[in-house]
Image 1 (cartoon, rainbow, N blue to C red):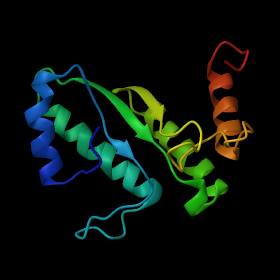
Image 2 (image 1 turned 120 degrees about the vertical axis):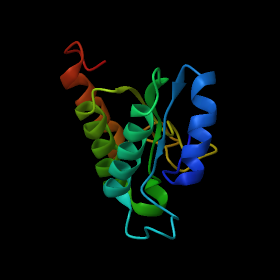
Image 3 (image 1 turned 90 degrees about the horizontal axis):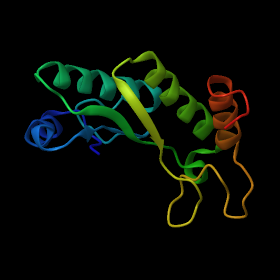
Image 4 (image 1 turned 180 degrees about the vertical axis):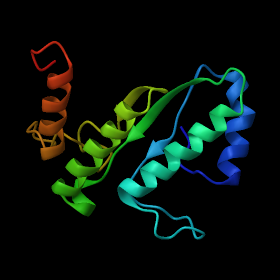
Length: 143
């Protein structure tokens, strides 16, 4: 699970790709790339996925592409921002036929601040939205 999209991340990707079955980026709304300070939020997620698409194209047999973490801290950025970001990551993944899976980063805020379920067990907006989205593409039962 790599977060970056620059030269160092690419070098690590190229070194690990022949050794693993699955690789994928971490998508998060913040960025600390001094060369691209405006790449944040949904724009950064798109830049990262575009970079991965290019890296994978250079390999004869790339590992399966999963988004290995898509998350946003509702405590730092608000529940609406978390909901929008998780939904945008899922939409990008659905639109990219190479993406085989998406793991949402953080179930509960226990040891993390990215949970889609509050510590008391109630759903955050992102969790409720995720259930609706999955239910609309699943078996109709909201599973």
